[in-house]
Length: 225
Ligand code: 6GU
Image (cartoon, rainbow, N blue to C red; front, side):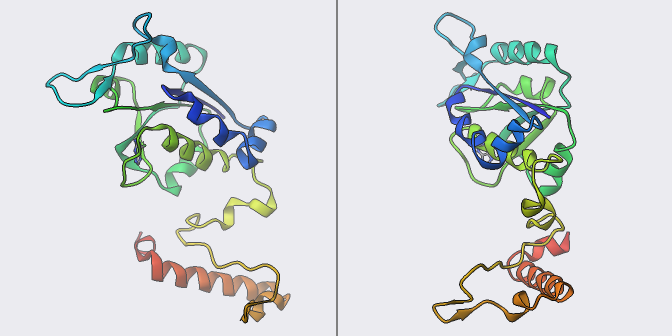
């Protein structure tokens, strides 16, 4: 998979992909991420990419022209399956959506800043608008990093048996069960016997029961889905 990201703060998008699983995905050639500074397509020598909003009010709006030029130039090298705008008024991202996106070949992500991007770019070029939750971030970059991480780890070959996505929270609409490591006794609290029984069928049954109970207690909405 290849992911292009357009941003006015590309520095925010370096470290998230340089470590751990995202690094492995790229080292293995399963994922390439290219971050593009929108200033490259600025409308003048001052690097302008935003302007005052019509109708007045505080906050700048990212202009059409730099965005269209960026989208057009990047689209010449690849056919994007989705042009995603990350924005708090988009659809809320969930595991089902990341699963679907992980099957795509080429994604373009546009990060908004200030008051966001001109509405006409959303209407004419953007194919998918995504939010990462009901709270406001100061820009789309951290949301884009979350999105790329959530998608990237699902690409075939990125995770190994130990890190398999199949046992993640949400993958079957259940939260993950509790996990334990050494020592067996921690401040008087014991690891459940069943986990040390060696009986794999029993252990799976216990994990399923715990996952179900945890989901009922904390996220009954997932079971209703
Ligand atoms: Cl995608 N962007 C911003 N700026 N804030 C958010 C968000 C996105 N998702 C939740 N909050």
